[in-house]
Length: 381
Image (cartoon, rainbow, N blue to C red):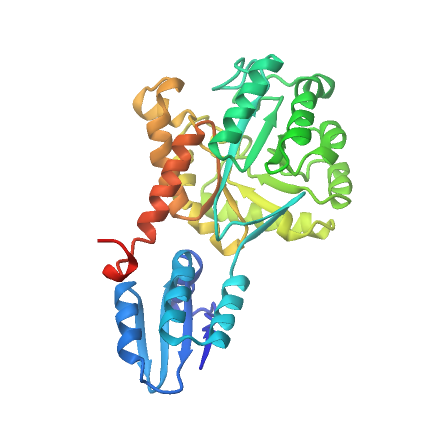
């Protein structure tokens, strides 16, 4: 027996383009399962039906379409039926080859297996939502404890807001705000990744040895010194698209051009592509909180072909005020609705203020997406 991935090639053919879209944008795997005989045909086709899979049998070979998200359940059930160790290892290799990893400092995250809950901790007086909340050591330490207890994967420390109309502060002042917090997390909480939200080279240079991720709204390529610094480190890069100084007539096309060039520039500078994650920049349009933000939310799956983790960074942003006239304190529900859409369409890193609610959202959606019924033998009545 043998299982292989059926490659889908892009071409000018409309059918090939549709198949490529189904595989890449919609995140499916096409598999060929070649059997020695058809003695297990009934059990296999029952499984395919239970998992709502499209399949075709040609002599003793099945062709199947399996959602990437459900591939591990498919692997488990296939082994229960066929019990073939070699076949199982072949499928494990296919899964590994199609997984999206993010190398970030001390961590290597498998984003195909588990999304990241990326918690925001702003040590600022003027951030749009939580500015002024965490201004002394006691409040900061308490918030970090709360984030850890919630199950956060990453804590991002920020000392310079980039909200619309922000006022820039000196790098020295930004460092004064964030360094002690980074040192506290680094020394006390070894199992959580530390990110810094900064676009200043001087800040990056000072903290790079004590962080796992750097988030740069300027996408790193505005200062050659950043690239020289980063290529000598192993930190993860979160590179953001910004349209604050741009007018687009073809948003998706221009964003694809941006990310393709940005990734090319970073990798040519000596940075491993597995260290790069992406942020569309919702909230960074020329018109703050305009309709371009909704188009970005909708088109998130258009970047799945890049095979890099995409961040969902919309927590309590101004679209809630524009659509529903909601104050920032009342935007949790609309945030969760929009995050759910983006998560289901390829967003793998959820950058949020509200950790418990986001964890519930992810767990609920994951359970639904893998909500297959295999009968009472699975222990559920």
